[in-house]
Length: 219
Image (cartoon, rainbow, N blue to C red; front, side, top):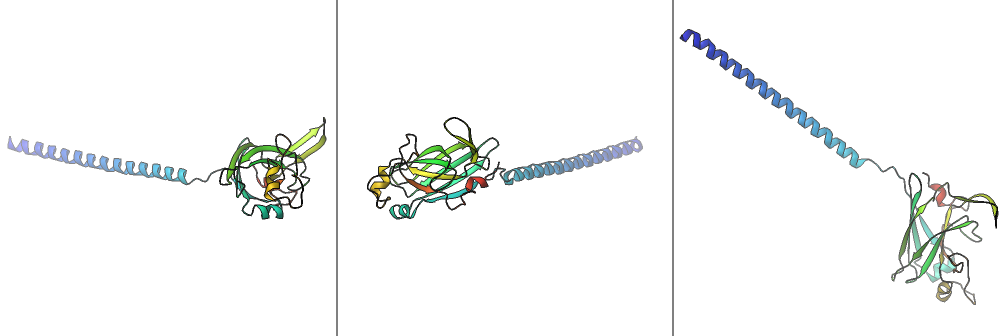
């Protein structure tokens, strides 16, 4: 009986050893698979986090419209960022160095200075107690911006408007600040909702008249 038991025990030990080897090998393979999977997931996550944004924003300044504005409001300035979207664009406008609690009106215009050409009323911008203000508008503010009139009270062919201009909402405000040297009464312009605004305070005249900042924005 001893001669029979020894081979059986030996066979059992050999089988157990082989099973243990297989189990260990499987564990190693599983560990490698988990490590590889985790690495791939981490790489994918890292790639997603570092992927650049598809929208390309374009930023530019709004500068004082004249030397008189620079004198009466030496810190007046504005900043604009346009972010193109699939269907239209987002334009964010901020102003600073303005009279406290004053109101302003923003227009998209054909030319940055008088006579301004075809003009499109966009939004009000109100300054706070510190002379700062901001507004965000959505529309077409890029190389495709244009107006056209085939008849009616006026007739004109498709005309691009690539500039921005900001006007005092109240004609009295710039006059009282001395922004209109030599004037005996406030200058009234049509650049607000009531067509009774003050003079222009900021514009984009740093760009060429026929190639304003909006012409640099593309969807």
